[in-house]
Image 1: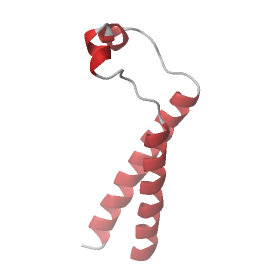
Image 2: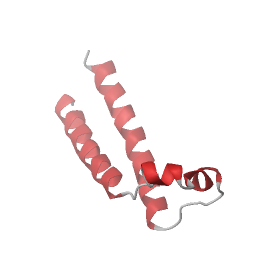
Image 3: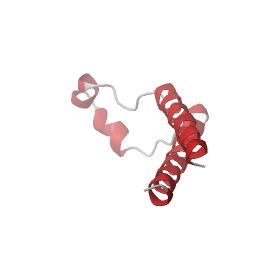
Length: 77
């Protein structure tokens, strides 16, 4: 059982890294914060499509990661 949970944790962590790396950045860096980055920060622009799907996948994978980690610590410690 411990090996199965560790394998699930490994797969979820790799998938979460891929999902995070595929997301587009939300900031323009230092130049964006100086030259009007506040408009994007306080604007009502919602992400749609590809970015929205990746954000949801990231949240689901993070929840699964936390649950599996807690299960490993609870059952095998």
